Image (cartoon, rainbow, N blue to C red):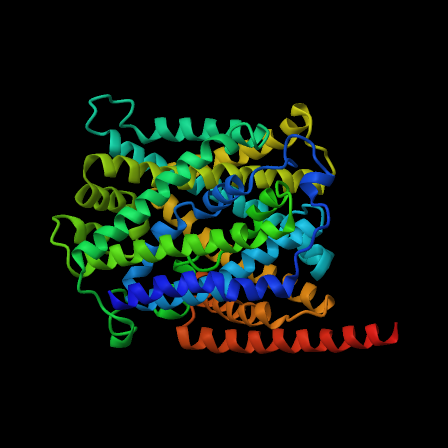
Length: 489
């Protein structure tokens, strides 16, 4: 438990120390924000800072820091290192700067930001890539809460409530309403309650960890030796734990809140702070999962937790943990939080997709009729994805796998775009250049070894390192040309 306590403290200190440093690098000021300058009462609208934090936290949380942490715990204490270092130096920095860039560019969505700093071709690629990713989020984050609600209602005696298809339909209907309505009408009103539930769950589980004080591996005992999975730590750990460390999906969500902030100076507590909070949730769930992996005699848990397809069993694992540790009342509140997290990421994912498509085709979204022009084909595509997922036994695992690597690939493009911006502003660009190079290597290795060619990990890593060197060389060439151009002006 020493590693867990040190990690908790490190995340908190990371917010106050490194978060403040990153804030100074960017330099928030008093210029009018898009929420004030472009107010439309639908997507551009000023909200209280505490409410924006709650919405941002739930937007980015989903089941990622819970399910990802459960899977990542099989890698042993190395999960602690990635959650802490990844969250402070990569994820929170990525979220803060992408959110602030959206504010500086009039509330622009991610493809617009990438296009401005990386060029039109990357913009077109990211447009398709990000919309597809958001559709996958909508599909994935329907299944997991539906599965939990089915499990929670199985003993009620009401057959309809114990049917996951019923809950999938209910949740998706909510998605359609929340995507269409002004952001302050539904999202702004119910998110604080859901945020309380999710944070209650995390705090309650942390208290139980200190009560039980489990004997779990510490970081210094060897990160590789304590691994319970045959998969290699590099690159699999860095794809498995995404939302608790760094996630490209977050950069698609930050513009939603960038359109609601009254002042740029709210950026660090909202963007950087929400990511640190998510890292804390991931850290707690990784520790809880390790406790069960190494100590818990609960019948059925080891069978449920074993195997590479653990993600499809994660909802049942969450239910079992909450029932065993928190009792009936605590279990209901905890599961409500875990149910709310993916639902509140799924609805804003589809909302982001609507806005990205609308911005691309230059279609204003103040009128309901024009919102429908975008939403009808969008909802139809997600429904088709859901039907395919439900018709295939491994459908959820396949979509989650695609979501995992595409999510991290999106973060690579975002980090490179931010790096270019920092160069242009003559600011410290190393704070995003180093994470960009690292994540470029991670994603290239994973694609070559796990997704595309199934190469041996060593060969895939070697090719990825070469790719990273080439990317860095390209950056140095561009940097030299850019500085030469600026000197001639």
